[in-house]
Image (cartoon, rainbow, N blue to C red; front, side, top):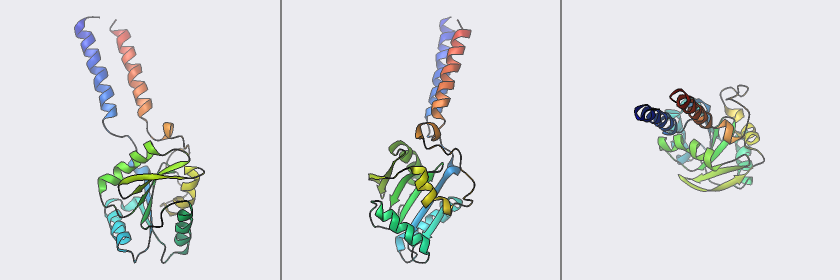
Length: 196
């Protein structure tokens, strides 16, 4: 293989690998936010307006002051070890709860990156909890998908429609990045064989 061919091959492999790793890869249509709060709470109302403006089809406001089911669910969440503050927002991705955010956060970039952080910091039985924008600990649940089915699924636009695989294995269901990297490396090996 000539130096020019080898250089071209290395540049191609470098381009493929860097293009795959620049941005987090996840489908935004698989994200759903359930905000538990009280319509008389100004922070809850502000966050609800924010979600309606920025994520209108991916959000449900569960008003504990007027909805008995929401009130009961909020009490169950508090019993799971969450602080007794509202608003409390569950962040769901791919039929699993990946993060809980306590407080009024009206930064769109935070809500977009909290899924990525939740996927990297949570696992099948532990969910990361943010106080405002700062990670502050975890809650332990039996299974993040079961937790989703109890606290999020009833409020999705169509509870019977799934958002993807039912797998809760975050290493395989959260991102196609490992598969893409493997394919890029396979392509590089094939190209190296061709240029020999």
